[in-house]
Image (cartoon, rainbow, N blue to C red; front, top):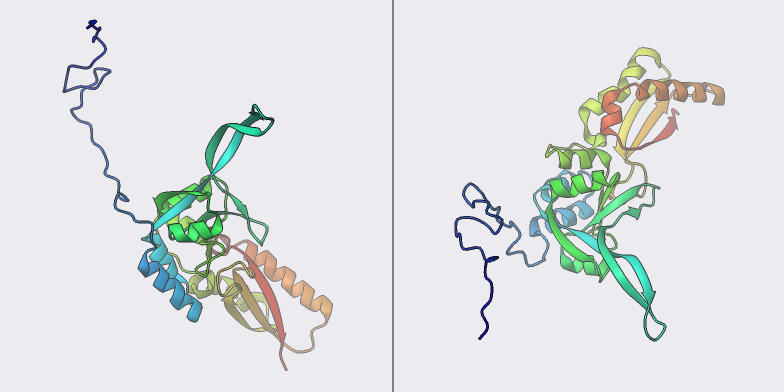
Length: 263
């Protein structure tokens, strides 16, 4: 039998093949090692309760924030060529994070509660497990202002920009239409300069969190008898005042205005 040169074999059990000592190194355990691909039952229950009574999405946010999510990766063909029989052959393909166009003209990162929900959306997607903070950071790094949970499934739910920021920074989130401080910020100019506004109401503009409308609907009850020019001037003044509020800018993703004439 021929002899072989074994100089390249590392004989030092206290160092790696490059001679760097193992001492002082640590290896993080995989928190998803036992993951079977199913959804967090707490998240599914929160989504079901929200669909039945869509008044407060915070329970969904809290369950999402503590769930394992799945980010889909899809093959992105880098280069193709022609095979021996004239067929197109993939020479290289990279897996990349997906960005989708949302109905409101924004871009969103699709994520999934389970492998089954991902398969409904795209059977070829490769699931990558991540916690909610990593999902939010991934969305932001790709310039997305939406996270779309389980698109195309019964459990679909969309997180908008303020909620994404809260997830990324691991903070609590209060939707704008339930935020008392936001309500006060909208009401402040009325108390000072707008006697023709009798009342203001803040409501969810997208009650099921599926991008069916703006995040926030503001309803203004006006005194009777205002003409069109007076109403337009009033709305312009309020829009200008509200645009100066940092709290509104940070807490409100989008809004629509509804005018109610007093009887």
